Length: 82
Image 1: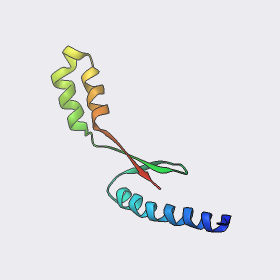
Image 2 (image 1 turned 60 degrees about the horizontal axis):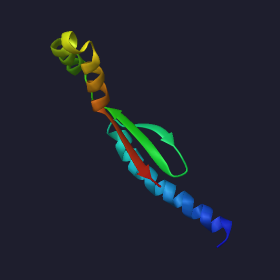
Image 3 (image 1 turned 45 degrees about the horizontal axis):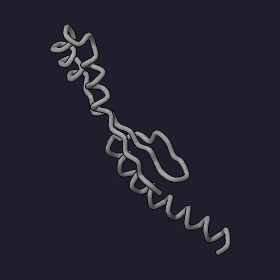
Image 4 (image 1 turned 135 degrees about the vertical axis):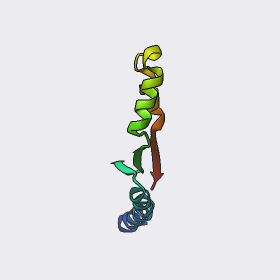
């Protein structure tokens, strides 16, 4: 196989994977990184009211650690391979 064919196959694979990425971007995901092997998407489902409730109920006992746990629990990452 020559290099032209290989590059065309890579471009076609990227275009097909990017169709999935566009679907996720339309659903409030953010494209964080694109590498030759994958797309990395991120999203935070945490809300301000959720942070306030966690802070209100756990601030005295955890000194803000509960809020950090809530923040990291609500972060999502998705990797789409090319």
